[in-house]
Length: 123
Image (cartoon, rainbow, N blue to C red; front, side):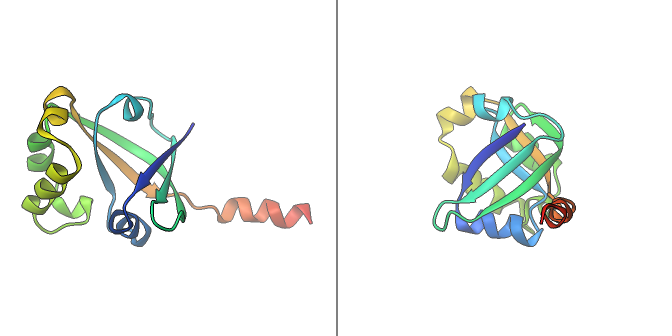
């Protein structure tokens, strides 16, 4: 199944360059629909440029502090766990964080070169 998630340019760039291998999210109704091997289409909110990623793993935690303390910050594209805390607190209110679990989606960019071969055969 394919899911669309809009992200800020900074996050989009981290995904595109491959430094963000774990997408930290609130485990809300949208994210609860995501399963292993699903496709996530990340859309840059400023440019509408898209990148396709495959969900390789899902980790659910009671709260963001547990997630951040457990996961190496380099998987999220940072060197410092405190920077992740700052970003999470900017993205989600304390109430949202209190009402939902935290989720880490392990992602990798989808290799579409396989599909390009089929496009070539159609010509």
